Length: 253
Ligand code: PGA
Image 1 (cartoon, rainbow, N blue to C red):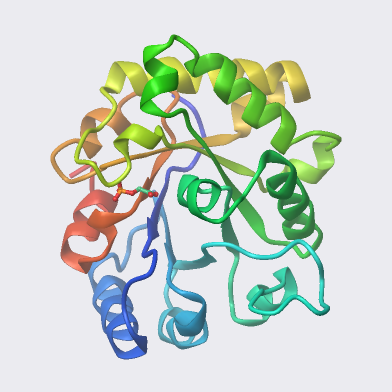
Image 2: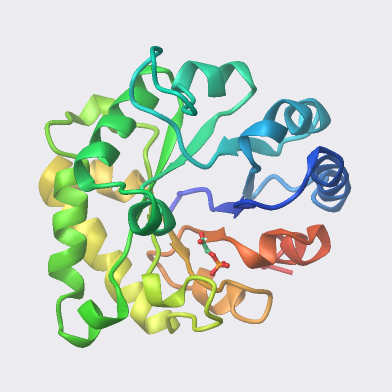
């Protein structure tokens, strides 16, 4: 048994107005009240962060953002800095999500800069990596992931990464209804933990949480979470409805 506390994180992506977000947060707060064995995080849109933060202030639910810029301030129209996220109440920030890589030009290099900026501001980065379907079929899964993880964490030292969370999200499983099997998830998570062990030492790798993401839902969460190296889930679609998301948080019952 590992002593890594599971993290169930909801990525709301580009969904919910302020009113909808606050209502969902309020409902979730009631549905997960008293849960301590699992950490719960939700990542709403930038515009609703402060409102959601106020709503969950008295609950153990943590707030996360879905992206940020690496510079602390400046002439970067449309961007948000790490300290602004902290100011809005965030403890986490999702970085390098495949939708950012695919549609918004995110690269391993920009993810690396963002992780550094997040850490400097005291945010916990949720660093996303994942292979495409073509890469998996070509037998390149591990080499793709190794490159993403090595470039994303290049030039970091151990003490920078204490709050880091890694999320393995196979691109072919995101929003497709196609989940990795528990064996596929475990195989990759064990590989990533070994890789992190080589980079930063086995102790660190054992403490590090590795989440699985990609079509996690109430019907598959339990078997995924039963895998020894799966320490939580990053959930898109099934996080939008508080009742469904709370079933994921209560996966043990
Ligand atoms: P999904 O998204 O649960 O809708 O597949 C996961 C994610 O993008 O984090």
